[in-house]
Length: 619
Ligand code: ADP
Ligand code: ZN
Image (tube, rainbow, N blue to C red; front, side):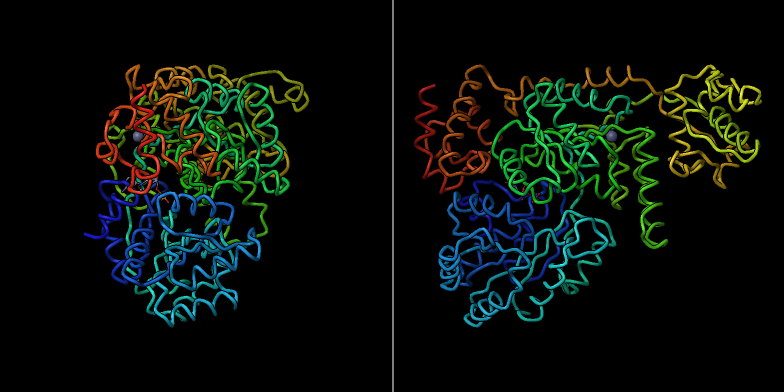
């Protein structure tokens, strides 16, 4: 089979993964496809292999639409290193460079051309495509990050809307649209707006078995983050998401003060600085990028070992997309989130205060609720995540990397009585001249603390004063957080004062039972100790190696760094960690043996094979 030959010879892989084989066959044969596959699932090969196959059959150039011009350079670099003639057209090129690439394209010699959507739909580009098409040299359109066409999604790009022109103008050229966004609304939007009604739809499992999902109760988020990085990811590359630009800068600065190589990234930074920081993140090995959601789409660095959230994302789609940037290489990675009462309150308020239409807000509230349920869950988080995307799955006991709840099922306690106390507390305030108070004051009253405010309002005289003295502050915060997350309480106004909702009555009457996770910072600490995989100091290989193997691995990495510098490409494009580790373990002593290592294609074998053998021979 030609596709398998290409996979082996060009990319050095022994077999297609999951639906790849079917997709490649369908598209190579001229069919349209919509591919829904999680991040790291291997979407690129789904259009790269058909592009190569069709090019070999004399069908010319495949055009890849990709939204991020900053990353085209590396994508094209990776193909060229593998011996595939590829190029990109974007605003960073000089006129002479552009003309050179246009000549390559018009000759049909180019196999893949990457362009930004706004470029593709210019009259000049369309005229060139017309000319190519007239000569039968337009082999394929690949539309990457296809969810950008949907206004429902979080990455809407108006330029994507114009892409339906491709279908109208070149109906016989196959199109493949790809995305890692799985929800039904986005999916139907993509189909409609890109006119993919006839396309075959390939839905892969969205499970990411190598990612461990964990949510910790927020106490001092930065300190918790630092401990997490030090204990489990010293020297690893990772992404830390924060909600605001200010928090991004503060957190990056604070981590740096504590010896972590952390850089900030948000839309408010100078374009130059953003580029430099992104470049360092891609090229160096152990940068922690502290960022707003402005960072990440299209970042296909495969060895990101963790994604941490210091603030709650908007919804599960965003959470899964962001955490999905961890562990694209299939090696163990962490999705870690610190979550607390303030997150619930803030997210709720952001929706309430947004100028959007009420119907839209209702949708957003529903999505937030689903995320809150995930954060509060005491059962398998993976099962819940996948269920959200309409996929049934087994709990992670069967996975390579289980979620926190499966690894250490959390103790729960029956908080029904406590919840009733809290709601009565709010009710009593209200009874007294319709007053409202925030969580801190309520907790003081329940715990019987005679604060200044308690004295001022005479709240020590309330029947609820001191009824909850046996619970600690943290426990009360957890109770309130749950009540808000579950919609029995809501917060109002600038001071986040608490108010009962219409469903609070169910709890007050004892009609619902509330089971909460046992809160304790100590439990969190125990967890991370036990779970910590001995990855050493981040320079450790992805598979266990003997002492000699470790020496070979280190030598290979040093060699790779030199080659990467020479080509001005990220190291993983030369060979990724998994490939180097396999070389170090197998220590091949012939070109034939080296060719059998996953990730060693014909071109790389020819270019580097002898160097590698020499290097291994000297160890
Ligand atoms: P996506 O775009 O879906 O996030 P990529 O196309 O970047 O994923 O692929 C993720 C990683 O998996 C890459 O390092 C890629 O080389 C690797 N990969 C993809 N398909 C295969 C395969 N069939 N065999 C081995 N590795 C693969
Ligand atoms: Zn689980």
